[in-house]
Amino acid sequence: MKIHVKGGRLIDPSAGTDKVGDLFLADQRIAGIGVAPAGFAADRVVDATGLVVCPALVDLSARLREPGFEYKATLESEMQAAVAGGIASLVCPPDTDPPLDEPGLVEMLKFRARSLKQARVFPLGALTQGLKGERLTEMAVLHGAGCVAFSQADAPISDKQVLMRALEYATTFGFAVWLRPDDATLSRGGVAHDGEVATRLGLSAIPACAETIALSAILILARETGARVHLCRLSTAESVAMVREAKRAGMQVSCDVSVYHVHLSEQDIGYFDANCNFVPPLRSVQDRAAIRAGLADGTIELNLSEIAQLFNSLDPSPLREKDLDRDAEEFIVSWARELPLRSEPRLVIRLETPLPPTHTPETVAAAVRNYFAYRASINRRSCRRPARRRRLVRSWL
Image (tube, rainbow, N blue to C red; front, side, top):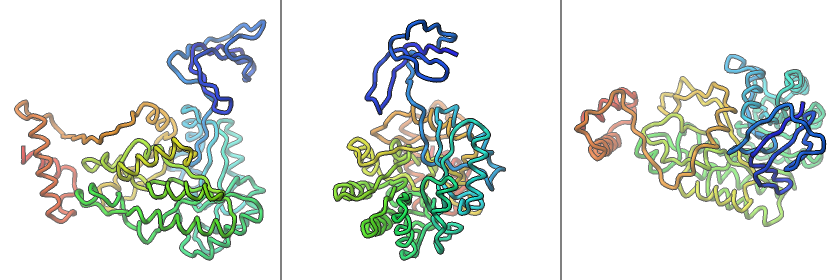
């Protein structure tokens, strides 16, 4: 089939292309850009006016639900969502059930993905057996089965000797190691950045040093072993600065951030918005500005969706009441494309019924301020239910 894509904005970073023009496809290959090749007769014309035409995207952290979590989503549904969102290649972290620590599991995942003939899947092998942080996996064997790199996903390695041995093993064979810097003893039980918003709402906090302390240890070990390390989901300004200095020193490090941390900050949690619960948490406005600067100057190479299930029915914290069990790839691409970069935070107040016409935005704002003052003076468990919070706000109107 021959296709004429008409009037789109053609973007190809590898070739430095960014212009409005036409694209001509024949037999699933590019036959011409700008000018149709001789004798080209289109079977289909696609009007791409106002749209971007670019190479398919690669998502470096898409948590697939097979094996082990088929009740949430199947590999087929995830592949369909990825293709619908313009994503042709997915990197799958190893935290499936069981983890990707044996070659048979990796081969099965690769075979299932190939049989669907949709998006391509590139698995990350588990760095330690069962992701327990105790015994190393057979990385060479896993690489032969199809793993492109090795990771602990979100499971910590508290034993730094194990981490050092893992980096030495990876260096010997030239493998890359993907690590998310997080000190589990400092972030344990937290749901929000340790700042003004967490204090005001009474939420368990995760300090920025939980990331930077772990990052410091990783960088020191990477320097000692000469390993290639990719740092996943940085979220703080100090982390960006540390990576920038490591690159200037000639270390083989790269890093990424999630799209949420580029667009949002802790202020967007607003009124206990569970849709703003992420790992790592949304940080301060200053951290967000540093992340944007890091993307602009090349310190941060990659921006990813990082879709992950965060639902935990045993944790009573209001920011745990979220479950992203949906076709996430299609959603996140459209969301990131349309969400504007906001320089000023905003608070959205949702009430079950409309306010009487006598109430103005000023009276509503005053009521919310009174509520937060009251909320900070009592035990945070006594006012956790949303219905209770709405009644309190109305009582001050």
